[in-house]
Amino acid sequence: MKVKANYCDGITANFKVLEVSIGPSGLTLPSGEVWVYEKLKLIASSKLDGSVTYNNKDYDGPNLTLVFDKGIDDPARDYLKRFSSHLTGDSNWHFVRWQIVTTAVILCLMFCFYLGYPYLNRAIVSVIPNSWAIKAGNLVVDGLYNEYSSNACHSADGDYALEKLVETLEIEGLSYPLRVEVVDHQQVNALTAAGGRVVIFNGLITKATSADEVAGVLAHETGHVYYQHPLQGLINVLGFSIVGSFLGGDAASVAVVGLSLSYSRDLERMADEKALEILQDKKISAQGILDFFERTDKKEKNEIVAELEDIFSTHPLSKERINIFSKHIAENEIKGTSISALSAEEWESLQNICNESNE
Ligand SMILES: [Zn+2]
Image (cartoon, rainbow, N blue to C red):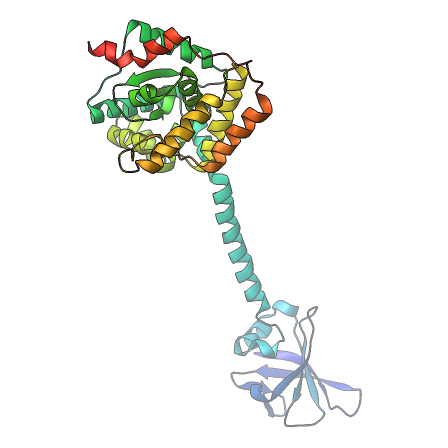
């Protein structure tokens, strides 16, 4: 490979224009003299025209400047660089820079995915038709009744009280109407399924000391409905395959996943905040839900095994949550101005909703 060169003897300022041949072991001058690569010492490298100037370690004085027609991207220069990047003065920086850029892009994509996943999830939630969400909720609740071989409890007075409670807590902005029922099971639990279906376990009602406690829990569940957390949870686990379930595919997995969902701290906080907003708006004291959580929290610590499957397995409780409720009450509630979620008589009917239906 031939390339133009300026040869300077190092004594005078004049230089000779030569044609140098670039070979596998070195540069061959027209005289036949070979400057082997190991002996070359790069003394200048131009980033503008790509020219490179060498001394030869064997001689004191002369230097040779290779001039490339096509500048920095000249094939002859690339050929030279392939022997060693030191011959052209191009460090590996170009390559390293690409590695850094690629790594940064990958990290950024991972980070964006991490940050953006909730938005992606919500985007999927937003395109799923409400009728599908309702169908998913039905699958989950049917699965629950199957699992516990129980049914929804009904009694004329109990149904009336429950309906009143639901109506009292009704808010705008729900994607679907709340459908709340009580299952005849002694767990202290409540389950919110997709499509606005909420199942309160009778154990929660019988162990609550006031209607306000149940109202508080129900307000919290309404928070999950408002933000469509159950559907988000299903999509988190099942991904797009959930669509298959709606189209007549694997319906069982929806039920299994829907029954085992538990929410992150962030989602619990969102539901709590919504609950406090609802309770305040409806003038029901948040003391109920605080009492309920504090009491069941203590009980949880005493009877860890017995109550494994209670409300905290699906709605993890933290000290922080209790503090938020306490702070809200201290800052926003004036004693004596709250109303009871149900009258004493209605509350009694609700507490007996499963007894009467069994008679
Ligand atoms: Zn929750």
